[in-house]
Every structure is written in C-alpha cells, then in structure tokens.
Image (cartoon, rainbow, N blue to C red):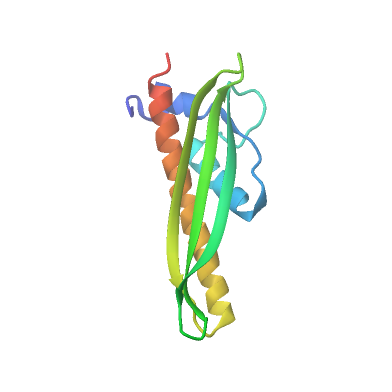
Length: 143
C-alpha cells in the first residue's frame, strides 16, 4: 500500500479525491482532517473521485446521581461515507466509521464546554483516520 511513498499509486489516487462539504462544526473538523491526510483532497474540481460524508454527532448523559444530576457524558461521532468514481458514477466504497469519548461533568460550565469541544476535535481526527485507511485499502485494490 505504501509502495512508492508520496508518488506511489495509492498516494496519487488519494490526492485525486474531492471531499464534498459536510454540515456543521463536526463536518468542518472532519473535512479539514481529511484534507490534511489526503494531500490535495480539499480541491473540488478536476478530480476523478468524490468522497461524500454524512455525520451523526451526539452527546448523551451516562452517570446520574440520586438528585438526577448528570455526572458523566459521552460524545459519539459516526460517519457514513461513499467514495464515488466521478467518471461513471460508480460507488467504489460505501462504509461507516465512528468513535466515542467520555468526559466528566463538573461544576464549571466552562470546563464542561471545553471537554465537549476537545472530545469533538479528537473524535474528528479518529474518524478521519478510519476513513483514510479504508479508502487507501480500496484504492490499492483499484486498477
């Protein structure tokens, strides 16, 4: 898969992928992480492949005290993505990726917001890594 380094078949194919816009802050984070990993992946025209992604971002309470106070939350980020060959419209890959992170809910509202934001940033990186790995394997097998 890594044969040829940055000039190998897989690296060239990855740089020929356009990433469709993704809604929301989580979409912005995932799209930027993907663009970093794919090289020229942020371009939208003149590419052979297109990566379409839909995200599901949730925060839910886990731990609960007897007075119904939430003490722990979990943030989950899931992505459904398709790699499409723009020459013939064929879907080359239809898959999902996802991860989750837990954090404590404390008395400081600022600390909780910071923990939620940090969790989202980390999850975006993890989901982007999963997507790039699956796409790389698929591109390795593409003639």
